Length: 430
Image 1 (cartoon, rainbow, N blue to C red):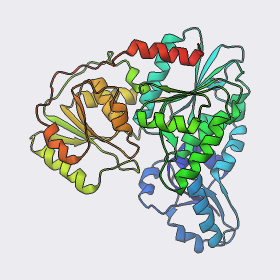
Image 2 (cartoon, rainbow, N blue to C red):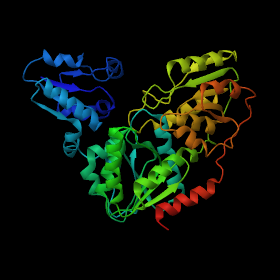
Image 3 (cartoon, rainbow, N blue to C red):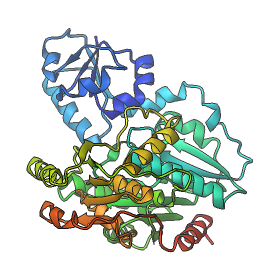
Image 4 (cartoon, rainbow, N blue to C red):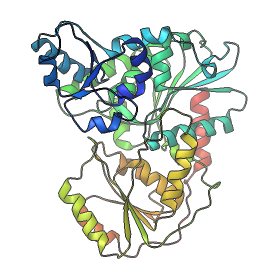
């Protein structure tokens, strides 16, 4: 009997290969809520981990999580349960990928003059897709003499060796920006970046504006040390950061190896002028995190809604995640729909960085709260001159911020041309 352990993003992203090369009979996970997230596309029985004690002795377990610390914990539990046959998805996914035919979009020529953008998203975070779309459009604008190649995080995992055969030492390698460097998001994030740094040791590599965050615990300290060792060994690495706290971490981490650059989040270069912006004066959107990056507890979230109720407007929940995103194909549609949704609101309350940025792009008044890595307040520094975007340190400050909200808003990124020129020079190494 073949069983999967883990019903999260690693399972969803790699289901096609898992089904083809492992062909499981059941899924186990300690969180029963995960079943609702996967049942629409993975129709298998779902059980708690205790199920392993009762199922047949000839069982084989595939650990379908990406975080190495979680894999270690599950491995220990399997040994305690006396399960003899098990393996981790992260150890076999590239071997399975070698058996697959390389998609035509990745079959680029060695003779082309290329800029290769790695680690763009296939997951459901609209903010990361906004970063990718904005980056690709900007690259096409300023590097028309190059072929711009995009390789997603999943494509890299699946076709790593085939992609490597098509890249030369003269190609410029970019790694998509975001907030996934550090110990919070290892799977497809920090681990992919480490792999790229090791694999392309002779290429110029530019990591586009990121937030770095390492937890203040044993896990975080261990991951920090590992990252320091890997990043410092590359001889031509440019690390761009989008907030001052990350700049301090990066300078310490790199220890004068490579270069550190301070730049705006790439989503801030997105061309929003192609959208018709409308405003509904009676709608408030609330977009709050429910993951490990959230700082707001349930009491604070309830208090936010209580304060908003006094404005006598319609209040609607929103999210920067979309179940319609699965790959790159629908990226532009999802981004367009989210910008339009936010543009039609009078006000949006959020603790999600790219909800704040999208509100800025759409000209919608936004009051934001920080997250665990402080990237919201850090990136806010680039747009703090927009009076319709505000950051509250505490929920108690919300009431004051709701007074005299501006109505006519228009986005601009201060010194945009200067930043574009700086990005161009960083990429070319001039």
